[in-house]
Amino acid sequence: MSVALHSSFTLAASILVIGTLSAGFVYEAVTRRRDARRFPPLGRLIDVGGRRLHLLAKGTGGPTIVIEQGAGSPSLAWLSVLDQVAPFACVCLYDRAGYQWSDAVSRPRTIEDRVRDLHALLKGAALPEPYILVAHSYGGFLVRLFARQYPDKVAGMVLVDTPHERTYFRREVLSLYSKFAWVLSLMKTLSWFGIPRLVVRLTAKADPSIPSDVTARINAGMVRRESFAAAMDDLRSCQKALPWILKPDALGNLGDIPL
Image 1 (spheres, rainbow, N blue to C red):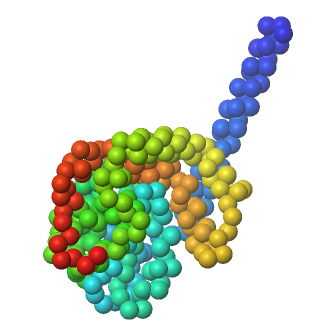
Image 2 (image 1 turned 90 degrees about the vertical axis):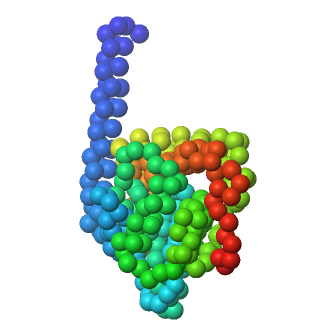
Image 3 (image 1 turned 45 degrees about the vertical axis):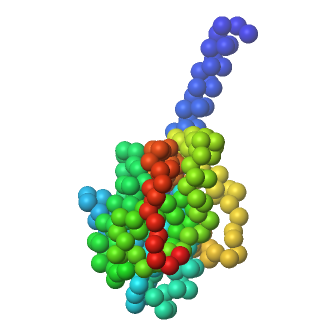
């Protein structure tokens, strides 16, 4: 291949790559704005100290049931549970920082930071106390720490697939999650160019158990770069929790709190 031909090929390839990335960037920006109009917050945006967290509450009567999702999991996956519980109790779900409609944060955050956010959210929303805390997986560590720090505010807990910390926080498990965090970091970068959004649009399959409008809201929220960053930080917060979380009684003793 001659030098001139090689240079022409390189130039053409560069133009193609730049053009593709530019088109992806525009696609992401336009679709993101469209989704913001199509899917406004379902609940309220509560100030937690210069930031806002999204809270969706239904029903009346106490104690208030608070649902805490797992790492990287959308709160809207619990929407059917919310609707089933609301006829007989006040029940709410919320989005941690960066997820769905909640404001993102730029700095890495700890498990303790997330607990402080939850406390500020519930206080700001003025929901009836005490609370029954329902948590999935990683969320179980958050609500256990919440119960340790605010025992008078907790009437009971429901833990769904939450392992013991000495199982979850083993080095080999956290090493696996660090690989997941790397993948999420890559997805965050690709999301600037609309690639995750396009892949979901082309390949996502409808779940007959979830209404199509809920699926659309979940998909629109999960492909945002803020969501990938939040999920990545959920996993990295586990590394930050070592070694204190493995100390005896680090998350507190539930005592007589119903579980």
